[in-house]
Every structure is written in C-alpha cells, then in structure tokens.
Image 1 (cartoon, helix red, strand yellow):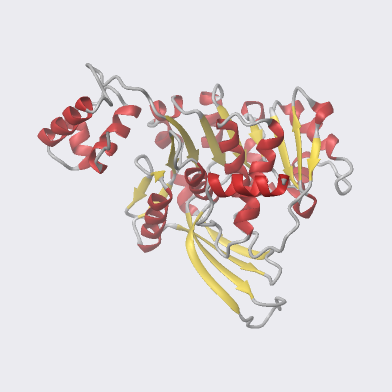
Image 2 (tube, rainbow, N blue to C red; image 1 turned 180 degrees about the horizontal axis):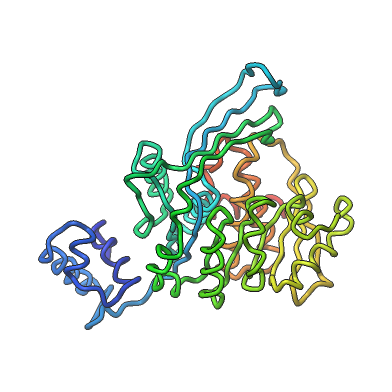
Length: 372
C-alpha cells in the first residue's frame, strides 16, 4: 500500500532506530505525539511494521560521507585564453564529490529497494537550500545531514576549456571540518546497518580513520579526490574494499611511474599490498585499469568510450557511483566496469556535474547499444 510522505519519514526513522520513542519522533519532526501514534498505527495496518520495537522488513541502504558544495562552472566556448575574458557559459548547481556520488547512486537505484543516506555539513543559507532541494529531487535522504546556522555552505569554482577539460578551480570548504568523529559516532545504527559506505577524502583524516576502524566489516568505497587529500587514507588502506584514483593520483600516492599505461601492474601491486581489495585506476582517454587483490593475473584495461566531451567535471563521481551500484546488484566484474564507465560517459555529455537524465534504464540501454 502507498505511504504518505509523513509515513515514509517515520518509517525511515524507525528503520535506523527501531527503539526510538514516539515522543522523540514527534520532536524530530516537529509534530504532536498523538499524530505520531496515528501514523505508526497506519504503518502497522499497512503491514510495514508489527509488534513492539517496530519490527519490519528492513530496506537496504548505503551511506555516503563527504563534501556537499555549490558548483560554479565557467565553460569556454572555444580555446581558453589566460589573462582575458572568454566567451562561454556559466552554470550553478549542487555539487561536492560525495554529494555527487550520492546523487548519481540515488538516480540509479530510484526503482530499487535501496535508500541513499548522505552524511555531510551544509550551511543554512541560499546555496545550502539549492543543495537540499537538488538532493531531495534526486532521491537522497538527508535526514541525518547537518544543516548549520553559523556556517557558510562550501563552494567550488571551476573553469572548463572548449574541449570539456577542467583547467583550474578554487574551493572554499571549511565547513567539512564539522564532519567530525562526534557527528559520525552519533550515527552508529545507520552506519552499522549499511550495505556499503562511501567516503570522499574531503573530510578530516580523523573522521576517515574512525569510519574505517569501526566499520571495516562493511564494504568501504574510497574516493581519493586528489593526490594531496589521498594521504588521509595512508593509515587505513587495509580497510578499503574499493578505491578509484586517477592515474596521476595513483603515481603520486605510490611514488611509482606508470610510464603511460604500460606499467600499471606495479601500481596495482603496491595498492593491494596495503590491503585494498579492488582497484580501479581511471586513465582518461585510455580507459580504466582494474585489478583485484586475489586475482592480480587477470588485471586488465578497459577502453574508454570515444565520443566528444561537453564537461568532464563529475565524471569520476558518476564512475564510483556506478561501481557501487553495480556491486550492490552483484553484476559480473566486467559488467561492473562497463556500467560505471557508461555512467561517467553520460555525465560528460551534460554541461552540469550531474546529468539529470542518468538512470539505470539509460545506462543499460547504452550497454546494449555498445554490445550490439
């Protein structure tokens, strides 16, 4: 039976904290306790909960942890010239590595029984409202995300050349320091019940280490973000199930030159010795290199989809989201890569960092087209 919006909210709260009191639910949602009792009765009558402790068939969920920011992007119409004004387009939209991953995952899993929870910090300002509205529209659950009165929402300004490649960027992300251990430790139930956890390297190193050391029994996917920020994982690589550095990041992290794409096996060996289970090194127009800790002899490179790029921003976020979704769907290893590559490709066809047309259906249709 169909649930009302309020019933859906209460069900999600009960799924993450089955022993919560009706009084606490009422305070969280700013409604009366008697209203909560009515909604819970309706949930029981509809078969979603039963018995004391609100026993129910739990809906699977993932948790994405990291940055949420407003994306300001300037895309040059032609060749980009320094020290002068360039004709082009300016766009604004919700962004942030982790938020983009959550957005893409939520779009892919829209018709599946998997919820996407996002843990982050957003300012209570105009930019924050843009992020909240865009996230809700995509299907991200922000029930446990911080909205801070005295903080400015993070922002990311990038300049893209006429070929769709990002040339330079400036970020203002001080607010991510609030994604700290105290905040994360208050979400133990949500994290413990997750099917997988995705972390980006924008959050404090102590927070990354806390998640890895306390929830290493759950598959953790890591987005290294950049070579500089990737060092935050140096003490906890052994807890990471899957990492997706690009070639430049991988070479700096390992201090090993890949000499183009001919020596990727040395990079893979380094990462797997740290304990990482699965490694995906993105190598631009050359494609993706994949390796697994217990199957190094079958490491391989997958060719890139060779079509014109509108904007490469966000492609890596879509790639990781695609991998995570394919993992949840238990796709075959090669199909996991193909699925993720198509997610990334479709993202490059949009001027924004999120392609609003991305869905499981569009990805599968493109997979069929490639295999035809």
